[in-house]
Length: 195
Image: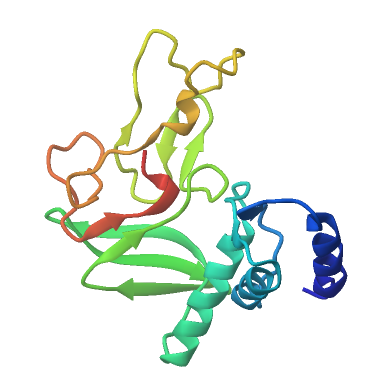
């Protein structure tokens, strides 16, 4: 964001005499003033401007995290950070989570829970010799074909099963407990933890 003016000047200089309809950038247009930067670039160039998705740890992801934190603070929602130590469940329902936060065990009761723990980088799915979901021990959907392994094939054109692995869910994105035919009734999954 601090380098926007020289960036815009260099961009305008580059575009001089060229005919384009769109400007597509990697996610480099800042963390806080992104919408303003996109609108300004569109206004000064007259072109459609957008950003692509980034690597697994993305600038748009940081923006979303900041926006969610600010929205929670504005509504008086308390945000706890910690590690889930145990899941209390009964009759297909998650009753509560116990997590360690600042060396204390905190019990979180709710009517429903959303599992958005990420895949490998977020820690939602751990893969050593086998892959497993790390909090609820939920069933994974692991595609099977003649070359399936948990690791990417040497030929980049082969399907990479590692990235297709995700939670096995029902129509409402409710994960299934390990070795169960019925999904958790009040647990829902979102994001990259899905297959």
